[in-house]
Length: 101
Image 1 (cartoon, rainbow, N blue to C red):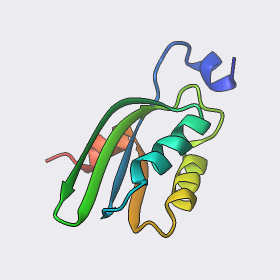
Image 2: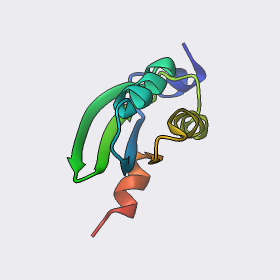
Image 3: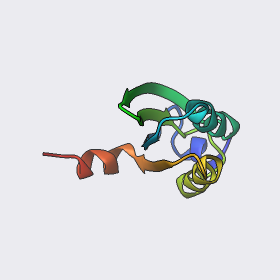
Image 4: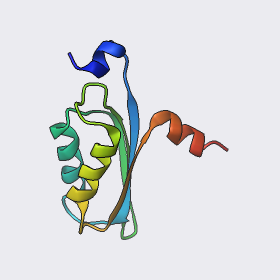
């Protein structure tokens, strides 16, 4: 059991991953591949194409991941480099606070 699991047993640690950019093949595969390698579980996902733009938002549980949020962000940026995506990872509570009306 990781230190994260011991301090927070059975509780999810949710993050919001957003990706916006020019549509092209392989975006979802690149992002979800990084998440799988990091032992991050996708809880919900939504994506759409708006003209030439691809947009995706997903909710993921990082409670069983051995890497920190900052490292996950770096890995996602590296994997999608050159794909024309603006990708961001935020804790769910930060995302909610930033998007409150």
